[in-house]
Image (cartoon, rainbow, N blue to C red; front, side, top):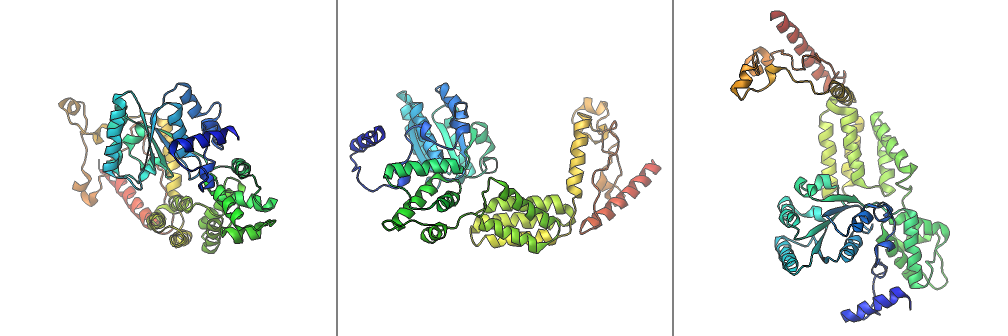
Length: 444
């Protein structure tokens, strides 16, 4: 019996469980030490972030951000073992305020007898703002070392106060090499090969889409579906597991080529080509929310104020997909792609912001003109702050024509609207205001 098998056998005996009871393959292969985790060398390699932390034998609170099946839960459990902390696990999907209070009280009791607690919260982004705030006191006083796991961008889903007290560590999707190691480990544990040919095996790795649990589930499905002596090619594999293989590897050129083609089709006002590339990427297993983010980017980069509604439609499509999921939500993305592809195009906002950034960087810390600064104190009033300021709403046409740029910089022109869509109207306004500004300057 192997060392691992002996250890597992003793654990089952201690827990009073039958070690012969059926167990999912993912549970059988759950790593028992950090060195067994594959695909996260940037965290667990010799110079990895977690390796460096463990060298000090202490942990701060952490947020694990990454897709499913990349080892977040397992790493948290093993970190507790490595640092002699009690491991407590909650899921934000099933837990509420009462569960949190119970976990905090138990952690305080352990702390009184010298035992620390690593509180692992899965799907932490599902807690609302008030629930997230409840972690702050117990993090600050050391009652718990919080390790939260999320598949969503923490910058958008977690409170700033919580993020300021925790370090975010990114878990990457598992590459084919890491998935192959997991699959080979499964074959060793089960003492049998997965009955597929080389092409079908490669397709299995693509189907797993960077998820270690998924590749083990696929292996189990194939073993269940194969008769004695039978081996599957790719077509038969797809029939057996009822799952399509992605057409391209999202981490390689295919991904970037297709998103580039989609973006350029939108920019070129070709709705049919844009729909084609959207459909190809969705069929290939692309993350729909990634596509939604890119459509939002297209709305602000290539349309801007030529049609201000484009950004609203793109954001609404993202929210609709978030609400409906696949496949129903994909239609919202298709609608947004058609909208941005057929909208009037202008990159004036994009160009103007680029010019403004460059000028701001070059100009440094120039002070705004005193007449547009507030004067809350008598000293500031004596220094000329707010002197000569004209309240635009109190002037004819609600336009004073004052200078707002720093005096040393002088007036600049960044935004030049196009003669298309709503920007044509904006251009008329700017020309009218420029005319008024010139007149008011002459009057002064």
